[in-house]
Structure formats: structure tokens, C-alpha cells
Length: 111
Image (cartoon, rainbow, N blue to C red):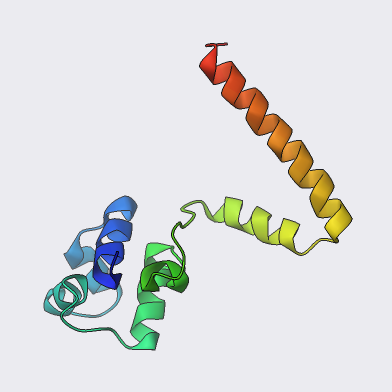
């Protein structure tokens, strides 16, 4: 996906119109449209502002990451886990994996 198509997807996921995004960035809808159609590339400063406003990473918008987290609290937790010692990370991830398996099993069996 291109920068523009990722920008459109993130904007729609955020529930924003092109006009609302332009207004929050102090830009014109014409400029936003040109970014979304990949007619021009935004400056790094503008791309960073777009990412911040849409609550996605710049890596996501530029195609260097396939996914993005919409939930900031989840991202904060992931960053906290990443900062821990390897042994602590292993324990936490083992627990999370077990809880995910349990949740999926409950969903599958309707409990």
C-alpha cells in the first residue's frame, strides 16, 4: 500500500473526514487530497503531524510497518514490556500467550 492509501485507511479508521484532518493540521483539503492520491509527498514534518493526528506510526504510513495499533494504552504496554529484561519479557509473553489461547477457546466454544 502507498502512503496515500495508508493515510486514507488510517483517517477512515479514526472516523475523520478529509476536511477535519486538513483543519486539524492547518492545511487545505486540496493538499490532503494530493497526499492521499499520491500526487505529492508531504514533508517529513507534515508526515509526522499526519501520523500523530491519525494515531499511527510514521513507519506505518511510509510502508515500513504492516500494522498499527489504534489503542494507545496497548502500545504503551507493549513498549513497557519491550523495556524489561529478557527473562521478565519471556514470563510476561508466556502468560499473555496462554491467556490468548484460553480466550480463543472460549470464543470457539461459545463460553
